[in-house]
Every structure is written in C-alpha cells, then in structure tokens.
Amino acid sequence: MFQIKKTFAALLGGLSLLPALTNAFTNPIFWEDLADLDIRRVNDTYYYTSSTMHYSPGAPILRSYDLKNWEYIAHAVPTLDFGSTYSLQGGQAYIQGIWASFFAYHPQKNTWFWGGCIDFQTSYLYSASSVTGPWTRYTTINKCYYDSGLLIDDDGTMYVSYANSNNIWVAQLSSDGKSEVRSQQVFVPPSDIGYLEGTRMYKRNGQYYILATHPANAEYTLKASSPWGSYSSKALAVSVKPPVTGGGNPHQGGLIDTPSGQWYYMAFVDSYPGGRIPAMAPVTWGSDGFPTLQLSNGAWGTSYPDVLTPHPVTSPTGIENLTSIGPRWEWNHNPDTSKFSTSSNGLTLNTATVTFDLYSARNTITRRILGPKSTSTIKLNYGNMKDGDRAGLVLLRHLSAWIGVKRDNGNYIVGFTNGLAMNSDWSTSNTGTTVATAGISGGTIYLRITADISPGGSKQALFYYSTDNSSWKQLGSFTMNTDWEFFMGYRYGIFNYATSALGGSVNVPYFQLDSA
Image (cartoon, rainbow, N blue to C red; front, side, top):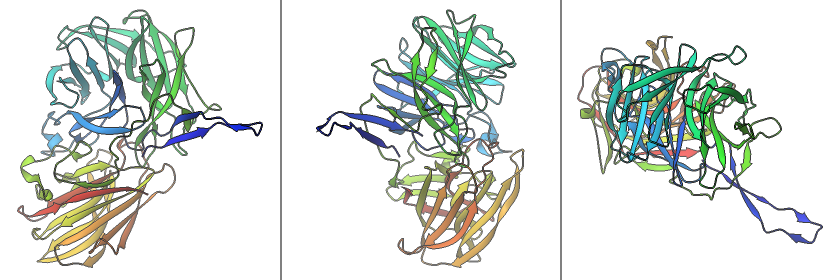
C-alpha cells in the first residue's frame, strides 16, 4: 500500500555517481476511505482519525511513524450509543453518526479526547488515558459542534472551532472539558469565499489558526492573535488539480509538523466508488504568517521529497485469521454481540435478524477496500446454516451485490445477487435478485470479490467462488456506483442472516486481502 521511491543523483560530467539518495512519498498516502481526517503528533508518532458514519465501532485511530505507513490501532467511539436505530432496531442510521469530528491529546491531563456532533443535535466527548483505549463516554454537551476542531492551548485551555449558521465559531470548554463556558462567532466568510465547514484549530508562534473548507474544492486558513479573533483569511488550496486521475480537488484536511520543524497539509480526495482518500503535500510559512502549499506545476504533486525516515508497519494485505476482531474491522451499525464469537477456529456469525433485506440485517462486518484495485477472499464453512439462511461476501454500499450461500429446503447453492438498492432517504428500495447459481455440497466454500475503485468511469467488481481454493469460477460482475451522496465508499462485507427463523450459523476462519 505504501511506496517508497528512491531518486538517484545524476552522473555529472561522466565522471562519478553522487552517492546521495533522497526518500520520497507518493500520493495518495494510502488508498482507503478515510475522510474528514484529524491528524495529531505526540513526540515522534502521528495519529489519525476519520469519519465512519453508521459503522461501528466509530472513529478509527491509525498510527504512523513516518506519515506514509499507517496501521489501525483502535477506535475512539466503542459503540454508537446514540439510539436504537444505530443498532438497526426500529429503523436505520445510514450516513448518520460519526461525521467530521475532533481528536487531540491533552498533555496536562495526560488524556486523549475525541468529540463530535451527532444528528445535528448533541456533541459527545469520549476520552482515554491511552490512545489505544479503553475509550469511554466523557460527557455530552447539548449543542452541536458541527465539523469541529479542538485546540489544547499552552495553558491547557480547550477551544473548539465549529461551523454554525454559515459562519465560523469558537467555543471555550470548562477546565475539566465537560461543559461550555463561552462561545462566539469569529468569522463571517465573504462572498468570494462562500460557505465554510470542516474546521481544524491550531496555534503556532503565538498565533491562532482555523482551517476551514469550502466543499468540495477549497481550503482556507484563518489567522488571529487571539482565539476570539479578529481573523484574517488566505486561501491554502483552491481547485487544485488532484494527484489521482479522475479524483476531486483535495480539501478538508489538517496541518501536521514533524519534530524537526517541517510542515505538511493532508487532505482528502473524492475518489468514488472507493470513497475519500488522503493525499499530502509540504507546507511552508510566509512572512505574513500564513501557510503556503507546495504544488508541482500548479497541481498537487504525485510525489514529493521527504525528510522522514521510512518506518514500515503491519501490511494491510495478506491472510488475517479471524481469531479476534481487530481495529481494521467495523460492523454495519452496532452488532448484536450475543450473535457472534471468535475462537481459534475464526469468526462464527449466528443469524441475528430474520429479514429478506441485507441492509436491515444485523452483524454484517466490513473492511475498507484497498485501492486502486484489490481482491478479498474468505473461507466459509456453511454446514450449520438453516433453511432460509443467506451468508457470504458483499460489496456494500447503497447499491450493492453479493456472492454467497443460500440454503432452501435442505439444499445448498452458491449464488450471485445484485440489484440491492436504497432510496434517497436510505430506506431499502430493492432487496436484490439472484441472477446466477451453482449447486454445492461438502460444507465449505471459498468466495472472492475483485474490485477496481479507481475514480471515474464505469468500474467493475467481479465475483468468484471455488470449492478447493484453487480453481475459481466467475459467477457475476457488478458496475459500482460513483455518486457521492452516501459519503462512505464501497466496502467488503461478510454477512449471515435468516429469512425464515434464527438458529443457523456460519464460520469464517480467515479473510485475505490482496492488492491487484
């Protein structure tokens, strides 16, 4: 997933080859759907969190030592405890939940904080003494800090920047961070900038900064000598050509510095059908105190020289034995924890919902697709399914398709089902049609999806099965949707639900991800 390129010094005058080697980083930094990033450094380690909407646990935390190689280590929101619909009970919460939120370390309190506005009503704060958790609910504030950023000032005061009524605001929290003591509008965007959201708040050399984005193509920097203003503004990136062919303009990101004083701006690139992916570029500071983005021929560079020493981490590809649920995984809404288990034999999914609608079925577990093209494979032990059960591997979004096992009247088939679809309010409009099948027996099958999520055009996903994990047969293909309104990109998902009665189960010993 991460490439480290070497550039060699030129042979000068035909006499000698200079020995200097320069590291470089390439964009996108990593090709996974991780939008609305908030990125923080503690000493020489970097931490990153992202929006997850209706997926649970929410707000993944990633770690890096070089800003290029990232690994999932935790989630800041252990469960979406915002109401029953977040558990697919009495409704659904598609595209609600964890939107752009704040994330920061408070050195005086030796505490990590995460906070965000849920359902445009209430701001929830979570905290942990270690970034890997356990994370717990810290407080709720009966106010929406929409698209918020958190600044921990030098004296430990906590300030929250946010968007409200088309303008930018700042709130000051109490010394314990559990309530608001002051709030003030600090910036009204002029007409040549327009609406702003996606705020991030910083302090550098005694100056206060708020980054704010004009969706979906521009980033502006606001600067003042006090958190309350008055703020002046300057464009950081406006309609910059992206480093990903077919992608959108990089925007809604954050600033990060290195221990040696280099600065970077990391933003996301709309890159559907796969979602929103991070890209990074160096930043310098001008005599006016504003950051300037370093472009390449007027565009966001596909590669930049790098001063950081490469530090590889665990690869996202390969076989993952599902003896536990690691932080790479998120459920579609909160799972029913009584209906799944892990052991040395892998993941066992008991049917948790009786429905004909996969979008309403609990306990579908998902992984982000690795771009630009990757292949997911599972081994599925299906011998304990009951009549009416459906289990398999899904390409999950508001238009979906799956390959899996169906048991009816004591008989098993493997089938390819497409046409699953949602309405504009994210209720289900079509539960799908099985358009290709094959008879199977023996209790074990291997399922595979290969997905091309490079942006633009009609991107295909191919669906395969095998009875021996050697000889593969394609059972179907699916054209992925590239609309942005669902926000989250396509994911690989593993599911098991009942259409008749509960009681069946399947076992998934491993999940394999390969970069194509």
